[in-house]
Image (cartoon, rainbow, N blue to C red; front, side, top):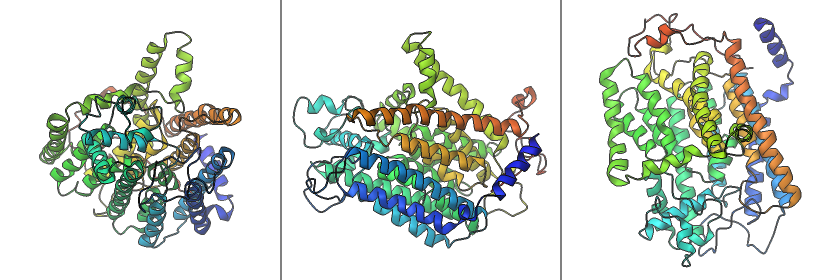
Length: 540
């Protein structure tokens, strides 16, 4: 049956029309999606474009004067829904073109992605008001207040503040959940922006843009002279329409955490102490970067000397940041663990559980179930995700014995498992998987991430806490809380089916009892985790 299904799938792929692997069409759709985004934001404040307060100079973000043009919600929202669909399709077509043999000039392709990224960072942020809260937390620090203890609303409800007054619901009464380095970037943006929300947002956008571009650049360098791998990396980072939309257009700080982790991977083979500093700094931005740290430890589990150097390097910024600089930041980050997003799989589960238990208990059940599912999905992905030796080693080397290869693959496994099982999920979180995923062989996971990211992006176009019209409210809630949630369940089902069709291997008592630090056999047949080699997925 499994062979028959593979044959049927291959036959289906082979019958796809030629335009589905036409790189020119793929790139054109990605560019078109970015153009539409920029045009909508440039038209000025609307149901999707943030209000940033008065402009006192010529600094970006740039947009038309408020009185010149006003686009209604039934213009901007459907346009963005269409734009995100077009961009995702363009990415899929470009992905297929790479698998079919298209080998673009790496830095020319990178330049196109960089150009789209830059332009997308020179317009007002769209759909998410998180960047306004970043600015607010920075403003609190400038005022001498602690953003982990004091909320923006506690200040602007008592006295007028030219920055805090422009924040939006629903997080005005929520203290910061970000790490010390993230808080410092917010403080620095507030210092540079002064008493002006528009200027502060500009600097936050620039911090995100620079980190985003550096992340893509380092990932390309990790691919070395492998042109196919370089093309994948560019497509999955700086040219990725879902990440340009989610991270840059929304000015989210995911890039600030990922850039340190990717830099750590760059130093991983030769300088484990420096690599440790990188992942330690990443953890001082967002604690979710712990998955990169676990993957690095797993990669060096057979080399205690390098492992100790790695841990020492990571401990340095973590102790300084959380132990001495902002000790309450780590406790603040725990607030995120109890949230359940209306656009995640947990929404349906919560609705079911509240029928039999009280809401508090139901939330606890859903969040606990999320952690259990994380372990289960991580196991499944570890059994099916293809192995591909990272460049820089002899071609006949066993990828299961190379620490960097193990680390990058394990990072993808853990981060993806966390993304798809967390009850609190948004499209911009996906950057932690997209960056290392480009360094792996093509697989079904590429398609699942595109599917997941497209639906999440579309679902949160109407993410601002605004009063939409009755008809729009019905449509956007149905899209986010029904169609999108169904799409996220489809991702979970697809991963289970992938694992099941590949032999549904279960962990054995012997494998669980085996010491993880035991050095594996050098034979590529036996492999690093003592599992049968997984065949590379069809890239069709």
